[in-house]
Image 1 (tube, rainbow, N blue to C red):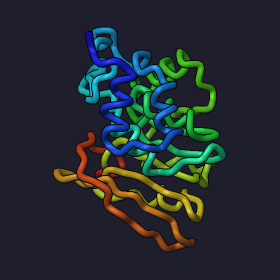
Image 2: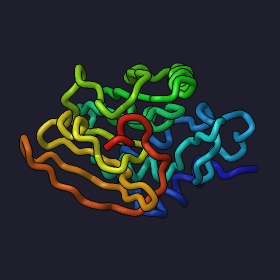
Image 3: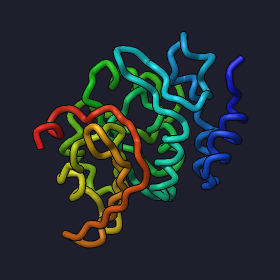
Image 4: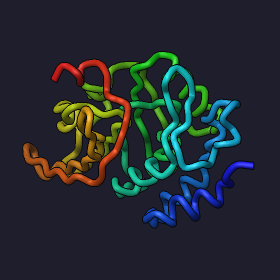
Length: 210
């Protein structure tokens, strides 16, 4: 028998500095088993990334919760996610904000995410197939932007799709990656803070040309 959801929340989240009550509730409310392949179901609530096919993974619960907590999201906010993956992170964000816009560059993953999100009954996530480098201009500006794949540097178009006072959270780097929190202080002034070392898949497409 694998780890229970209650054990994951208590040991791996609360036991490791996740204290935001809304984030903990969202992690409880989202059924991770709806996003995990059948052959991995016994590992659903283990605190690790799990394979979902063709070299792709569903994110580690702690990292999903850590990133959501670091963004300090409020119920009225609108978020852009770059890298929908299987839809798990978008589902957690959807419990925390008014609306999530999410872009996925891999076609089969985008289709899988749509199917998974439909199964959850979540209605406040819009998904799109495409390269996330240029964001989602017609839905901008965003209160927060989160990247689930690592660009060598933060794409400039994304920075300028933040509202003044908005936050962007991204793993940045090639071999050595750091989770970076960027704050848009004014029209052309951004402040950055490094949070912790991480390992994410590289952001593909346009991001690799910069």
